[in-house]
Amino acid sequence: MFETLDAVRDDIARRLTRAAKDRKCPMHTPVVATSDADARVMVLRAFDASGWSLRFHTDSRSPKCAVIGEAGSPVAVLGYDKGQKVQLRLRGEGRIVREGAEVDAAWAASTNFARRCYLGDGPGSAADAPTSGLPSEYEGVEPSDEVLTPARQNFAILKIELRELDWFYLAHTGHLRAQFVRDGDEWIGRWVTP
Image (cartoon, rainbow, N blue to C red; front, side, top):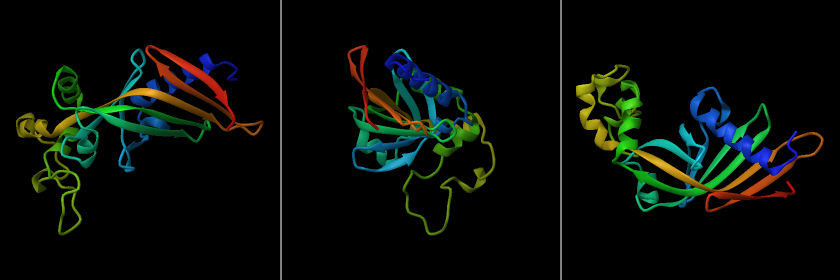
């Protein structure tokens, strides 16, 4: 099935491409870990196959944005497809982007229900009772574009330029594992024991 490193690298690219587009794909919501050893599930919004980068949406007030910053920081991503028995461990340089054409396009492509998340209190804000953090008038309600104007300042993207790929395939005949390291625009791959 996977007899060459090129086939494995192509499999990784196919999985990430599908994960970004298909919300039912198991890798649509991978675990993202930051350099402070904190991890969280995030929605993969885009995969750029030519630049090998991932894009996630985030609240610019979240603690992870302070850890990663605009200058960048190491980030790891873990995805698992239980049905196909493939695990991806990805490492790269993450950076928070708050302004620019790509951020504006991501904001414009979001629904008002999704944008609504950036209206409320910042992630991690203390509360006296269980809360979504949203203003009460927008609980379960889709706000207008006008109401969402101030929310845009809290919206950012997390861009991760991938530098290392680790592909693990579980099989009853024997597991397979391959690793890749980026060297400029090329990927140097090797088979390793699982």
